[in-house]
Image (cartoon, rainbow, N blue to C red):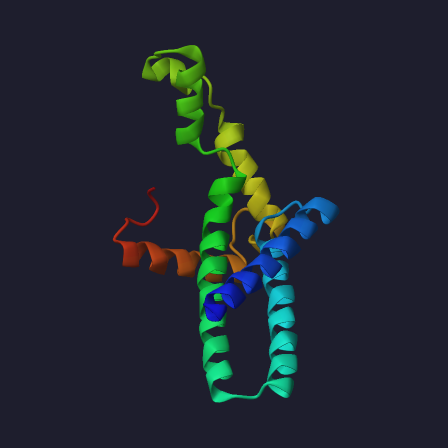
Amino acid sequence: MVTILVGILFYLVFFFISIIIWNFYKPKGEIKPLLISLIISFIFIYLFNIIKNYYFYNVNIIYSNTLSIILYMAITTAYILTFPAINILIPSFKILTIINTKGPLKSEEIIEYFSASELIDSRIEMLKNDGLFDNNSYNNIGVLGKIIAIIFIIYRKILGASIGKG
């Protein structure tokens, strides 16, 4: 039980750090603030473990702490992977909202509520703000962009989803 609580505590540290970053620094991008929150929370966990192991060195505590860190990493990874979906307006949700407020509509009428700027331009700007393009050019993906793209390609392959569709 303590293992689960410590893992959740570690995640809450990450979560509160990310809230502080979003509310006080108002970053333009998504990925950099999440990575900064992750690094700061790792530093907190590292310091916590040093202090804990100094005063309570025990093999069972180390095992329990390792499980707590695995739980923390699982929850944090799930949060980071779902954050873009939470942060942006999802077209499916917008369609549901439109139909809920306007009543039954034809496909052509629903499409009129969307603009290219809303769907594509805003996402390109967000990727640019995160530094995922090489030299802020839209022609080349930077190193971080390539790493993230490879991770998501592998992730989609594991899930059995096709690449470039979704």
